[in-house]
Image (cartoon, rainbow, N blue to C red):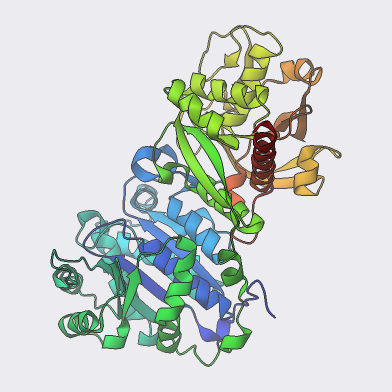
Length: 551
Ligand code: GLN
């Protein structure tokens, strides 16, 4: 039985493109719908990639506030990109590059640089054709080597910022044979007060799409439930597409079930037929089915994990939430994540820590919330609660240990306290001269050497690992020896850099300077997360036993 999709790019098929736009409002999950369709095409044997277009003027997502845009996702090549790329990587099981996130900042910067270099000499440089040509070039280049490329345009049709992209995609489709391009429009189908599915918002939004010269081939209606046949017919009639090109996208409990729903609806089959790929696809019985097996694992029981962060917003820590789910799939357990406000480590928050089976302190920047994070580390360390510290969480674990075990009073990270007498976390030497904030951190995949006979070695099962980074500060080498004299061990290093820490006298206490959450996938959970959830399960069971004995 095939497990993980075994795809191969077949150049003779020619690149196919799925252009995905959104209507009515943003946040409908069009990226998940697109990624799910892509996953099914991959299961059918095709090589699938994706491009996310973000029509903002930022060059990349690196300087953006997670509260507005959700987490900054980090790619292997160091690209700091929109979190949707994380979904594409997780759903398609691929590794993308920065070139797969097109932003207005990147496009304009490139065109303006070319103008200054004199490349357009004599010409007036304009949005059409110069910006649109650059967009088309980027889409073509990103699609190279794949059978199908999904191109998702962020925002909603009608946004001023998105116009050059829609025009570029219109031209692109004009230049390609018809069967190579499929336009998918994802809209909202709300219920009226008297329980009727309303198609007017969809009609208006498709009207808007058509006014800029695009005609959707497929319409996907996001709705609380499945679209009724009458609703589909109405949408088909007013939006001028066949009824069988209208698909439902009802609410599901878990985003990982969306591919199963898309399959039931037959959207993948429709896409294959449109592209003339139905014949090339693996027969239904031979398609990879690992995904379905993984995401429908039976769950027995649950564990509670406290996430001590600054933002009460799931998207701000999306990859962490996903990594915990992946570990939950593997271990057959539901992982409930409880946000604990790092900024206000009041008693009721401490109560949350007490009620949890594990604690995570995630990455972050700046002073706000750091004392609360240090408090949480201390609680986990002293009470034998399984702990995972990620990047800033790793750094705060070092600070906590320095202050409370080594007795280095006032120890801190130089990022938070430039005057600290003990800068146990200090700026990376290569950052001394760096002034710009965009794209200048230590970014992307780097190798960590792992010490044998350590927890890290047990988790990774190897003497090295490659994980993604995003930081400007690190453990100050002047303090290594003081730490290692006690129970703290730096079990992962990269030359002079401390990458992983663990405590010898604790059930599970691990910190990583890198971000393992970016490489966790359903079916391939990240080792530090898997270890944490396993330890949480043990802690929960031990608690339950103790409870039985005392009662
Ligand atoms: N602010 C810290 C640094 O720059 C940690 C970064 C992070 O958590 N991603 O090193």
